[in-house]
Length: 305
Image 1 (cartoon, rainbow, N blue to C red):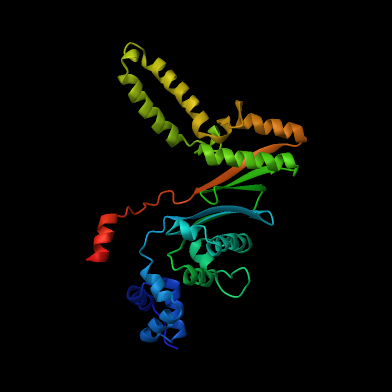
Image 2: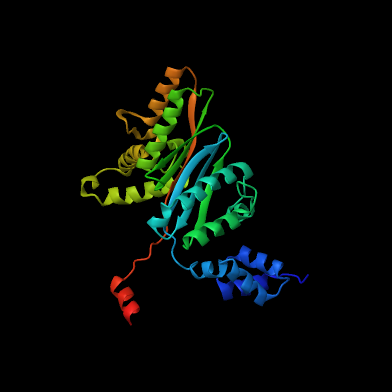
């Protein structure tokens, strides 16, 4: 059997647009014959998939779930809302969570090589099957897996946001699960940057302090105040800022009279067991992806030109 080199794989990818793993598999199956490999990809509908790979996949689904105690959050992107709501697409995402929970892959590349839920194929194969059915570019963008603690998931608006909250507690009372969901909803709505003010790194605080000091010194109201007083004012402002950016210091959305930390303590007292929020993950669909802005007039002109 001819050795399949990285250059051969890359050349096939360039000529067909198919994924790297699909190209490698095709070359292996065809004993390194590039022409046969092209046919192999075409027969499986993967070469045409490659033609769509350049399209921006900015829709899709962020999903969170717990499988046998293991929490998983994943984001899978596609091109349109229509496909994002299709049962084949959503079913793929939900089964993908099961694979991640069971196999604990290191990254997306490793995930693609994992066995699918029914053991009949790899994740890459299952993804390609969904493509063949829906004919739209799909990307598994990211995932995180948490095996420790009591994990509670929350999915907002059919996959716009997926949140996983990890609690440390010996209680599994309904009130604790409800607390996890309420905290997850808080995270979804309020987008905290940090779990607790003690977790805010020194560089972040120093940067914020520098900016605020410069602003304060330009304020005419502070013109005659000593630097020590201005710095005290600034640090007081940063302390208030924690209530915006730190989950446990945020006002609890269901009761503005207490912060999240106080609410957690209240529930812990009610169930008679300590509860600590150990961490959270928040994935928002398409965050950071630049969506293409189509020019309708140009598209129509292209069609009739």
